[in-house]
Image (cartoon, rainbow, N blue to C red; front, side):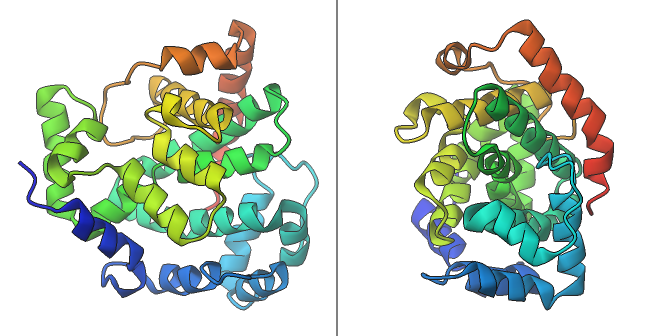
Length: 277
């Protein structure tokens, strides 16, 4: 049984700046994005002062994840074009990618594919902000990275349990931590002042029917996650593909052609997207 109290876990997650396992760039970034009235100019300056971060942000903005065919040459253009919520999510994405590659082999590819699939589905459903859904797809498993960084032994135990018992990593986490990566991700998203919709998508991407404010967005990321697993892009912590929630599936009403389009776009674009790191 779990020996980790979920309140202690939440406290640690919310005080991420003090965690010894978290790299400097993520600590600096979390201070910036937690500011109550952060402006696009401030975020732009923060990115521009870090040449490596600038390169990664521009690579990602110009990649298949966001689907901008035009080349975006400057950080200020990128921030104006994408807006505060998307640029914050994108910054988190590029900062966490390196950690993903170090902590769980394949999680980076899984998250990229999920971001692409989420954007394509959101466009098919005519949603106004497909880039925001893409960010949700990119960050839906961010809780896994934090759990892996802070509790590597326990997380390995959870992964082994999932494998041995034929249960999902989500269920194994609940046994091990009294919480799941979805909880951890939503605590972080809340702490980092992300919009309610994005917090809900992260929190409920395994249980989309619980989403009150963003049921369609949550259904999209849930479906994208399962599609990516079924197509075996990357690795999300277990080899099984959980069942797609029937209510979410019904809500999306995607035709076979739609699903083929999503898969084709993912396959066509994964190579260029993987080049971001």
